[in-house]
Length: 137
Length: 241
Image 1 (cartoon, rainbow over the protein chains, first blue to last red):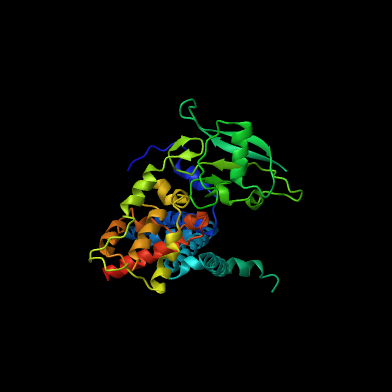
Image 2 (image 1 turned 90 degrees about the horizontal axis):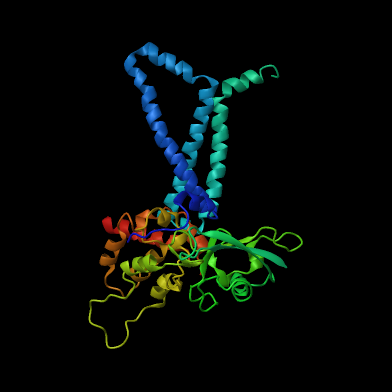
């Protein structure tokens, strides 16, 4: 059933078609999924210093304490949250009655996600926050 | 009220590439899009080509992409397109394109061959193995209720052509065919359920549905297609268990 398509390509169609909740949720799910897959390889590569002994690994861990890596870790958590929470929504759609309330489910789950993201931000940057407000307290 | 229509034009005999042409018309907010298309064809440019038959949202001929979204041109009023400002004028042009991802025959007319092949692939007819009873095969009101919504489909292809899975994979059955599969799988009179489930239990069947909800958004008959596809997924999982 091959047909020759005139008209636009796939990505142009995805970009130009008018999207509602479902479309955006799908795009977020795809992007976060790809990012997390890429992260797994980075993660395995980072852990490979374990084979080079204790000092090499400790030096690397010290690098990951730098603010830039803390921000990156925080962003990684955002991707994990988006993917997990939207995954719950997809399970509800596929195996529950989610098709009737998927828009609300997405809104509520993303609100939970934003709260969890901010709470995690407090934990990751607690040291910096305490330092910044040390003079005030 | 002045309104600009930006219409997709392509004549394979004379044009190398498709292009968009602007038409400025006087229209009423309560005019349907198809009324304006008729006006353009009759009064301004006779070469404009589009399909339409009943003009009452039943035949499903005039499915097209209006302002980025698939819908029936005969079932949408200009005032519902949401581009009016306070003075009730349309600042942005109303963009009319053929159904996305389909081969184009001319202007807004697309080739449905593939769509019908997928429709035929799910065997859209009642299959029975037991001999027919003396009178008709009866259904209880509850049995009818189960397939009522799925039987409302008018096969306008708005759903199938709005689905990103269809754009990326030519072999994906698409929401319209899967809805038809549901209509017969959940029909209490049909006796070929297993055969039907085998047809849709492939990577190009129900499992390519990624619950993007473009089909539900596009359906002019407001059928919750994703719900029906999710019922099929559940049925397949139950069969495996």
